[in-house]
Amino acid sequence: MQTVELSIADKYRRYVNTYFLKKVQPIVIDRAEGATVWDESGRAYVDLYSGISVVNAGHNRPEVIDAAIAQMRKLIHCNSYIYHNKPTADFAEALASIMPSPDLRVSFFGSSGAEAVEGAMRIAKQFTKRTEFVALEMSFHGRTAATLSVTGNWNRKKGGGPYMPGVAFAPAPFAYRSEHGADPERLAREAADAIEWVIDTQTSGSVAAFIAEPVMGEGGIIVPPPNYFKYVKEILDRRGILFIADEVQSGFGRTGKMLAIEHFGVVPDIVVTAKGIADGFPLAAFTTREEIARAFTPGDHLSTFGGNPVACAAALANLEVHRRERLSERSEEKGARTLALLRELAAKHKAIGDVRGAGLMIGIEIVADQKSKSPDAARATLIQDRLLTDGFLIGLGGYHGNVLRLQPPLVISDEDLNRGVRALDAALA
Image 1 (cartoon, one colour):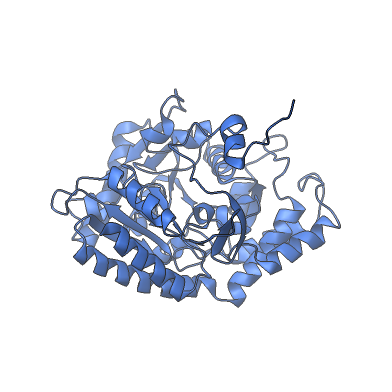
Image 2 (cartoon, helix red, strand yellow):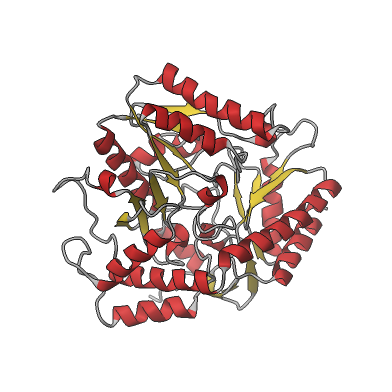
């Protein structure tokens, strides 16, 4: 009896669990370079999403690949905590150099953003000897039990409870959907004051840390007003509460700075990085002060694959590319120009309620009409589908699922960005 070879899509349907998705995009990606991916038929697509904000230095970056191959020929795995190795040591030193303070220099490495966030939460508890957390509504911090506990979106959490007790949520500083959105200073003050109110009314006074994304990704690319984190940090410092900055999605040049928290002029106590850290290799970290790092005692923590020599070699090469090619500055310049073009579209198309972002981390909120601001997730999905048909990959997110997410590789050409804006214009029409 002759067996029939299944297609890639059929193998996915039969053997890969994707039931947690509304749909898998109906293309098979075969190869990629820079800001372009090709399907198995050879058709090219402009990648405006970077594999969820991961390949910031571009797909298949030669320098990163060469560094990984060279390291693979020498050593793939040894456990980077039980034994010393050069790539892990070198990248830990390099990672400390991009932190907003020289005091933030001790890193723990894991394999995913969720793992690093959960590690940051644990060390915060051990250092402060407290047990509670404050997070933001509409936030997203990962899909483990602890990270979902501090995620402020029931769509990500449904069916998985009960979650970790001792977590309280404050309103996100979301200008578009706030009555004070036209007044950034008032929004910053009131959103920060809400955190103090939440601490006093929803906790037992044992808050270890406040955790927030400097620019909220899954929540719909929410950029806080300029003074928000300054006011928040003042509140936290008065109460001895740590600030965990979740830079998993916003780090490594994505917002026009190496780390998004640099836009706000404050120094967190713990910084979590992942995604863009190694241009596609699985690596994550949380970085903190030595006094906080020392809260871990023997047996408290470990990661089998964390700080893998190959991933760290790739990460070091990736960071060198970022610096040499000034990718943060390029992200800032390209992002500002793209935001201006998109705001011209917003004046033309009533389906665009808001355009917002920092650098090449851009959100386009799709609404039923601009006056009511009623979210239109169905139309956003249709636009995403149309753009895929026209050869462009974009993301979709936001609490209501109505925000188009543009987060392309930072090396994308101006022409590809222009083509993407034109294709969006056509899709909206």
